[in-house]
Image (cartoon, rainbow, N blue to C red):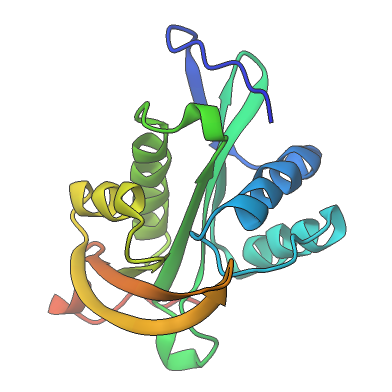
Amino acid sequence: MAISNTVTTPLLIRACHPKDIPTLTGLYAWHVENGTGTFELDAPDARQMASRLQQADEQGWPWLVAERAGQVIGYACAQPFRPRMAFRHCVEDSVYLAPDCQRQGIGRLLMAELIAQCEARGATQMIAVIGDAANAGSIGLHHALGFEPAGQLSAVGWKFARWLDVVLMQRRLGFGAESAPRQKE
């Protein structure tokens, strides 16, 4: 996946639009096929990605893209951590970048905006479910943004002919558990 990585070109963080789905589908497919940050084994097609965006939109959670020189080079999104109603104020984050755009601060900018938007929407906790305990980039990114270790699940995923761990990290949003949450319908 060839993406211009001219660091001096301004970066735009914006809401994801349906027209971005083909690019996001290809970007995420690269991570499914080459990485251990996601435990999906088959990359979703554009229709499935569009459905995920629509569901997040209907639930009121953001999907953001990073765009440089008119090209989408990464995205971050939030979704409910679990489907049961008691979890409705807790979100799980995801962030994926084009391979040649990593380690440039783009993920940090996407995640900072995602955190701010989730706080504004009334989320009180954000959970990172990080595939592969050796995923130092994602663990470091989340730590730099105030996430704390919350546990590790050993050998729960089988991908690329090996067992993989999951690292759980958590960050309080807004007042966290210090007060009752705002009502989210």
